[in-house]
Amino acid sequence: MRQSKLFTKTKKESPEGEVSKNAELLIRGGFVHKEMSGVYSYLPLGLRVIKKIENIIREEMNGVGGQEILMSAFQPKENWEKTGRWESMDDLYKVPDSSGKEVALGPTHEEIVVPILKNYISSYKDFPIAIYQIQNKFRMELRAKSGLLRGREFIMKDMYSFHTNKEDFENFYEKMKGVYKSIFKRIGIGHLTYMTFASGGTFSKYSHEFQTITPVGEDTIYVDEGSSVAVNKEVFNDEILDQLGLDKAKMVEHRAIEVGNIFDLKTKYSVPFDLSYTDEKGEKNTVLMGCYGIGLGRLMGTVVEVLSDDKGIIWPASIAPFSIHLLSLGEDEAVLKEADKVYDALIKNNVEVLFDDRSGFSAGEKFADSDLLGIPLRVVVSARSIKEGGIELKKRTEEKGKIVSLNELLSLLAPKS
Image (cartoon, rainbow, N blue to C red; front, side):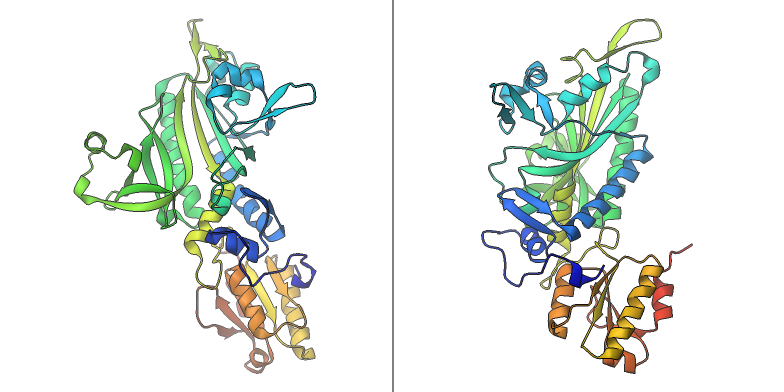
């Protein structure tokens, strides 16, 4: 893509009213546009990042047999009354129409997915089942002050699994722990993210959160760095530590951002809707459930928080909007011709490239914009690089680049067999 055709522009000044690094850098880079507190629109660069994250998550969900659907954001009031959450969930958006009839704007989808399943499953032979979606959610978040980390509208992957017995559920739940670790590793924050024991609420002894270490996190966790086991502050006591075989003296306190969670729901949502099956003996049994959530926008914001530097964003290659940021410096005809040649070659070789072909911008301005946007590799065509026999290649994390030929660049970018 030619940057001269990109309708968004970078900004030098920090956006007014934003206190979080992720919001500041994403707005300045033209990745997102703030509509109101806790509500952001994704612009071309930001949408490319979200789609990369989405595809990684989708691959991992499909890999464990997940079936993707897309459920309604409008949810019947009566479903929420059946589970008791119409009155008990204090951040639920309740939307009346002109007749006075109310619906919920979905913050989560247990009240939808369970009635759907009830229409299609009846026998033990139908199990196990795992259903997921990637969809916008809505929560009346009054503390929406952390950019993409805490929003009122946000993109979420929510998976729901359905089982006939405890052993089958526990096997799948353990598998999902590994899947989540794989997701965060692929996205580039696996080394900073810990599976964390947390309260399971009213229906489970524990839930498991996935917490990414950062000083700006809203959660406090305690990490046993030897075993990589972590415990949330809300369940950090001697009894829990004894159950988990952890030594309190070895636990290190950290601030962290929750980037995902998994829950044992047992029959909490099956019972209200009478979601059941007939077993081999012809007897009726209640279905067991688990749920598994990841906020995509929060994940994107977390990456920016933990991997950026004082110059801008540093995207991991797996989710960067483009692989290469190609810069043409100066108005010399030979430079422009060579830059076009490099751009055409990259496109021909299916390399995702953003080409800064803008005229009227100094080298310093282009370098600053490139650092802000955080694309993993920067390729510069200039009079100096041509004189030295090639193009300058530099990683976003490096201080200095090196001169390589176009063939060398293409060879470096070629898929490894």
